[in-house]
Image (cartoon, rainbow over all chains, first blue to last red; front, side):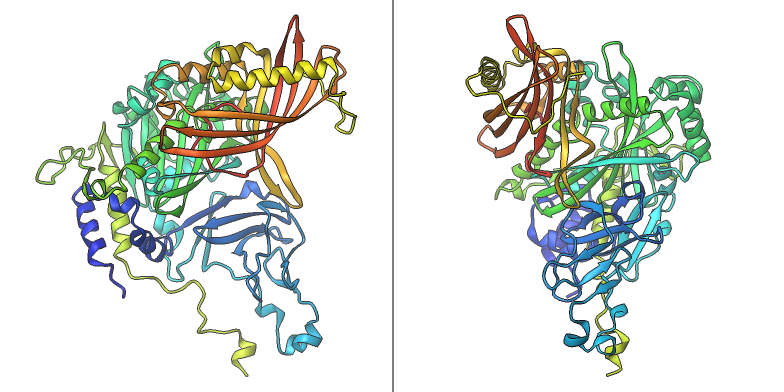
Amino acid sequence: MNEVSEHIARMLADVRQGWIPPGIYSDQSVFEEERRRLFSRTWQFLAHDSEIPNKGDYVVRNVLDDSFIVARGDDGQIRAFLNVCRHRAGQVCRNESGNTKRFLCPYHAWSYKTDGSLAGVPYHEEAYGGDAQLRKEDYSLYAPPHTAMFNGLIFVNLDPDAAPLPDYLGEYAKYLAFYFPAGPRRVEVRGPQRWRFGANWKIPAENFSGDTYHTPHTHASTGVIKLVSNAATTNRKAGINFAAGGGAGSTFRLEAGTLVERMRSLGYPDDHIERFTASLAPELRTMIEKDGVIPSASTMFPNFSLLHLWARIDDDGQIAPFTTIRLWRPISPTETEISAWWVGDSDASDEFKEKSFKAYVMCFGTSGMFEQDDMDAWSTLTRMTQGYMSGSIHLHARMGLRGDGSEMREPLENFSGPGIGHLGFNEFNQRRWLRFWAEHLEMDVPAPPVRLASPPLSQAAE
Amino acid sequence: MPSTVATMERTLPFDHPMHLAAHRFLVEEAYVQDRREFDTWLEMLAPDVSYRVPVTSTFGANPHKQGEMDHLSEDLYSLRMRVARLKTNLAWTESPPSRTRHMITNVCCYRTEKPDEIRVLSAFLVFRTQGDYQGPDLLAGMRDDILRQCGEDMRLARRVVSLDESVLKTQNLAIFL
């Protein structure tokens, strides 16, 4: 039972040749395998620590259909635990966020502290015989097998045998630190905006990993109204796509100038540039200074994406930059829930934060003038390939490949960034993402997150 | 900045001339929006208009928490840009354009400290479809508006749209609420 069906195996073989069978976007059996083999073992984003700054603060977040509470306990520590009562699976927290001392199950009133430990059981003595029979310390809310933090980003992994997050990230960690530095620059998030639309989750994840080819046309309107400069739309082929470790992404070509001049041209104030430069990995600094490109969109495999862009925010032509997070959570093969956060520099002036936020809302998110058209392209693609005939075709993902499957372009020899870089339009990164995806679907189903073979000691002793 | 009033104050009588003028504004605006006459709609806005659609979510016991995150957070410049984009014929998501129906009801008005400004609350239900493939999508919520008398006409000086859903079920907000 540990091998995928022949039907899926054929799809994976096609994907590896750069031909996408549209069934991967709508087939229920593919989705079931993704649940069992991919989401069960990959690092999944839950929250940013700036969302829960105070003791007792919490947010509730999903990994597929699993609900998790992410809370800051009385000791100031951040923990994640399954939002499911140990007694009869009541949802112990039904709010999206808040501040509390206790999570109370609405069914039989078992209550839990903000560190996940069981605080109260009604009639503990009379009904259960007290701690001798039901030791409260054995009935904390279940913690996911692994929780890990990367510069404020909180991830979980449901595979007990998962490799540690730094191993999973590899060299991509340096790009992730471009958006979320270890310091001295500190960041904070606002959000999320949440909405659902009729597309398969893989389409946006793959797009953010390197689809610069769609920008000049899909987002042509933003250039016409001068919301952004040419670098961000028509000149995207001048950028370098990077691929490193567990992630990949694209860059924008910058005008000539020093690092400071280049950052200023994107609308960054000098105090920000100072913190930014002090927080930058040396390779990223060289990439901006020498190669003349700066990260734009990227995806950490499988479904966590980031974007960095700048836009004109008033009639005087003032430019403001922004960074944003995308989490692509599948609801079904053909529906995705998006959570989108704005990412700001904590030490920036309120004035700059508002400018950056304005640029974000104009460009991305629910109403963003870029993202509106992405949503439409991705839901249309998903809908158009659900037919009997259209479901039998192959989609072309071979840009940059010759007929014999060899690469037309070698990676850049002198790329300064971590990992490898490709200049210009290419679907190398998307194929890499799809290859990761195919590899995961061929992996064994991991051990379950909770091992019932090891019951709490008090009962094992009986 | 537009003025505000205490919410517990009694509404203006429903036959008060200011209530009638505000109601008329909202109904005319709804038709303008549904006919997609966005240039006319821009003319109905004050030059210093503030137009926000904050994200709604449940925070503790409060089911209508509105924090710092917005779906839309607009001034006249950004609204003009959105309208200009729709007119480029390159705004693919609105090609073909959405059919919308703005239904506005439960209108009540309050005086403000400024004699030329009135605060207007209303409930709305927006029905959205596209072609024969998209929707129907529904968006429900309330508006909290400040309308300003400008000569013969009223202008929208401030709008805060409170949506009733925390997770929107429409693929984007390429339409105006």
